[in-house]
Length: 209
Image 1: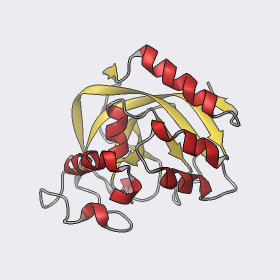
Image 2: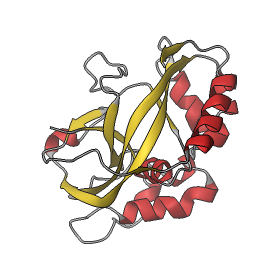
Image 3: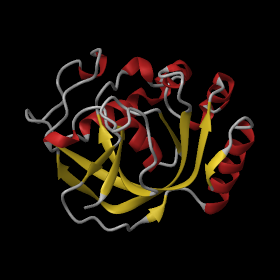
C-alpha cells in the first residue's frame, strides 16, 4: 500500500505550493523506537490536524491555516467552532485530501538552535515552535528532510482510518495512488534553496545525499 508521511495540514499546503521545501522531525510517542526514523524516501503527504494552532504558525499564514482546515471532510460538513484555538489540537475529519507526494533529496540532523532560527525563511511555523521541536527529547538530534514535492494532477480523498490517529509519522493508505504529477518548484529555484540550506547547516553531517 502507498506510504504517507503525516504533517500538519498547513505545512502540506505550504509544501504543495512551493512555499516550503523542508520539514523538521523528532518523532512521536507512538513511533516504534520513540524517535523519528526515515523509513521511506518517497511518500505521499498526509494532512493532519493534531496540535495545529494559530499561535504556532506565522501570522502571514493564518489564512492558509483556515484553508487547510476547510479541506478536511468533517462529520458536520464544517470544522468545529474555534478549532484552531484549542490546546492540543482538534479531532480528525472523516476524510482528508492528498494533494502531493515528495521525494527526500537530503536528510540532515542538527543540534544547534542557531541553525533552526536561521532556517526560519524556509518554513511557515513560528521560530519558537521550531526550536521547541529541537528541544524536545534533547538527547536526540532534530531531523531535517529536504523534500522535492510533486503536486498530483487531481487531489485524492481518502477515508481517515483509526490506525491513522496518534503521534506517528508513517501511515499506509488503503488505495492505489500513482506517483504522478509535476514538481512544485523549478529545478534552478530548488537547487538554489537547497544549497542555501546546506550552507546554513554547517554543523550538520548529511545522512543521505
